[in-house]
Length: 461
Image (cartoon, rainbow, N blue to C red):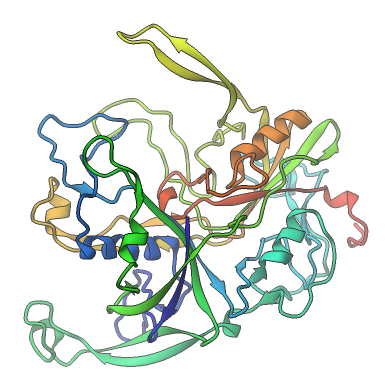
């Protein structure tokens, strides 16, 4: 993957879908979601009109309509980020939700003696999460951790944060306010039609001079025709033009392209998890938001499906028991002769672990807007308009698991870490968001945890 450092040439505008009328300013100064940067690169690839790229048809699992046209491009684009990067090349990541003070010692921990009368816990939650710090409305923890501090946290380190290791939003970007005149959609002018006499207010994000938007990205394309060598289309895209339009209102960023150094993101634990009461304790922290949609009992075409509530609960966790539904590849391969041709199938086995608690903040609204495409196969794309709105679990959310053995904990970590079981990774292999994983959603890293009662210094009961 390439490392892309984006430097805005002006203020940026990242609207989240809320209205911009009257006193409402559209909340356009929030840190951009991964889908915004991925969409900007995807649009830039289309505008570049690269020759010889692979074209594919719409469809899932190799199932296509008979008359499907090969008019889809750049499906290989994968990104991660953006994350704040300073002039010294230090990357920062969203603070884990269990950190609430100026240390790397988790303040929020699952309580072992939770009972059904403790509160209105979801059915899959075995433990409530207690706060070992005195009650306080204000958190002393800044929302961003440096890569080195984050790695120390995942490794189980417990120390005070040094200067510059934790940042507030205001330390690398400002919010600017502006008043504009509404433009009529049909005429493209002001003072006409529905836009007559209308003003709007907006918030803009201004990144400080020494900071960049850090993104990891690659678009490995096999080209059309047999025997062609794969190529990274991002190299071709930025070979001559180092600019990309990001966010709303056609705001431009200059792009610096660097080779990615390993590791790309903080490395999760792959072994050495705490053992308590015969269970091995694994926690998974989101480095980027994740989207887990509700799954109905029946599909739109009438096919039966296994229902799932989605929302804060990953689709790969059983909605009632909390059992992990992911499978572990053993590395063994067998041949399947049940079809017309023999197939090689990787053997898989269950991961004996279950979700027991979670720390999840308020959801993020993920939406977008599509321009009309007269050549599209679907009516919705031909007419354009608002994209589907999803509610995403925010980065920093923490999920607590109990595994039946040390081996099962290792298998669970290999399934959840963004780098799998690799200890010197050069690529992102696991994206645990049901939707938009290729756009950088669902990246996480594993650590270990302990019970509230086992940590010294918590308030007396």
